[in-house]
Structure formats: C-alpha cells, structure tokens
Length: 299
Image (cartoon, rainbow, N blue to C red; front, side):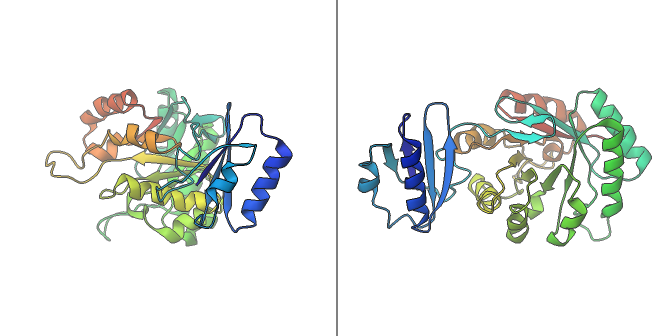
C-alpha cells in the first residue's frame, strides 16, 4: 500500500501517522521527493482502513500495490536511486564503467590491468577472487589471497573494487571490499541475500541465466527488506536457443527494469556474448537503451 502525503503536510501529523502505522506491525518506507512524500507500507495491509487514512487532511491519496516486490518498486520510490561507491555515483544519470579480469591470478596481473582500465576510463575495478565454475576441476580463484591482491591494486590506482561473494561464511573476508557482487548462480541464494541486507555495502546483483525480471526484483527485495538499500541490478544475458554466443543479452530488460524499479541497472556484455568482438556493439547498445553503467571483462 502507498500513502501519498500532501506537499504541505504537517511534520508532526506525518510522524504521528507513521507511528500509528508502525503500531499496526507495518514497516514504513519513506520516500521524500521534490514535490511529494510517499509512505510505502510493507507487511499485512489487509487490516488497514484505506478510507480512514484517505480522509486525513495530510493525505493526498492512498492505493494498494499488487506487485509482490515493494521496496524495489518505483511506485514506492519514484526518484532514481543513486548508489555511491566512494566518489563514484551509479544511477540517476550517472554512468559507471567497471572493468577488470575475470579472475585475479597474481599481483603483477591485477595491478597491470587496474592501471590499464583506469587509463581507459574505468572508475571501478572488478576481479574474481572466488570463482564459481561449472567443473569442479577448473580454477576456483585465489579466494582470500585474491581479495588482498585487489586491495593492493586499489591502493595503486585509487579504483574501488568489485568482487563476487559466494557464501555467507566468507563475509569476514569482504569487510574492506567496496562492492560485493552476487553472481548469476547465487541470485536466489536467499540466505546469502538476507545477510547482505544486513551490511552497509553496495551490492551488485546479477540476473540468473534462466531467471525472469520479477525473480531478479524479488531477489533484490530480499536484500532491501533486510535493510540495505544500496542495490545495483545487472543484466548479464540469459540462456535461449542462440547457438553462436554464450547467452542472449536481453537489452529490453534495461528499460523495463527502470520502469518497474528505482534501482540502477548496469549491463555485462562480456558474459552475455562470450565473444570479445561482440562486446563493443553490445556495450554501445546498452548505453543507448538507458543502462546506468557497464561491467567489462578485461584480460
């Protein structure tokens, strides 16, 4: 349920209304815009008397939200969310460039690549310390050592670091990581999502290779419902009948996600196509359809 307050709503009465609603066991998401304030009511709103609330002199309108996702819903938060990573802003008209190697392999490698991508215009450094692989025999990443190498590269370049977390048990290793990435395989690891909702760090949430947009938004809802509003959505391609590329990059997801949610949306053309020569045209297309940034794999 959404309660839209009048522009000139009395602050004391507004606070009284919020406390009364909280007393009914509801969570209240307050979105203060330039022209209006919106109260998003989260929980069992079936017992809320819409007519009673609508009759209050500080209330402009009341309506129910039928979507199962609430916190991520643009109806709850009409203005774009801007996620701040140090001096870098993502969303709300700010375009972020995230680049780096698929996996961190050595200090020499990650520092060299970090300096190269910074010179090329990137403002965040990505690198995999923990690597989920289809085969158990493939390289699984340097893990904690890889994070330490990323921190060295950050010190050398000043670029904030983005790296993937795979397990709740590894959270202590990520205390000094700037952005925690949830990969496609973990998009519906709900225990992990809830824990990430309890930390005050930006979360880059990738869409699963066979997941719908609603499922992606519901995963983001897990994070936000647990208290963390710094979520970045990422379209990284989905599995279809395409037989010439790794996945199909669903660029239509970008404007649709912007319509449904206030969260920033970035695109990963590298994992979507799996072909280096396809990355530039797909990156340009992502920018053209309104993406808030790109995450590019660099070897």
